[in-house]
Image (cartoon, rainbow, N blue to C red):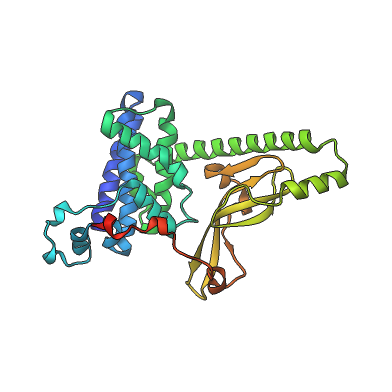
Length: 304
């Protein structure tokens, strides 16, 4: 539960992962497994710097006692404390560092699947190894900044390998985005190219009137492919750093006029569209009708 110990452990696991990756396909199973552990430990290290209780299983009271400095009352030793796994650690950190971490829940899923596949059954998808491995690197980079760890200290002799893998991943994301934009422009022209300006205006007003998915919040924005009204969708939070404000963090853009749908790595290549937005509404008014999701609250029988 100690942040410094978790930082050191993460660096050791990542050094082993990079060593395995550099040895080629025969060691890729070790690479994805070790990189997943390195990412998990650094996520926990960040949470532990805020408070050790943030990395323990919420329902395990003995673990909470140890994390809050009251281990003398626990019925189990600290060595048996239960902590959260990779997916939950990422979810907790992502709530705090939404705009710094480019890896959302969907992008993390292949990492968790690959690590667990190796750990539990010795299986991993060879074709996805580089993508999974680089996802871990991109997840770790902003955490190093938050934790005050220099890249040279963490990546060591593999700094150049890290840089090359990141550069290749960013280029690939840009290529995929450009391909999506090209397909969307072609679809738009095929659908509406034969219409007059007035006819197109009437049709698009109907087609683009509502967002395609329900999320915490959405805002209309001009589509980068066809110029029609598309929709940014994502989550909101309260930023109380100065005067409390509601901040909208988008992570999906979708346009029903041309079928453009962008998220994950490609979304971060959309420029200003991926920026957080401060909403022009007070937190009291914005969340006036908010109610907790009762389906997520366990009843008494479930907690016993």
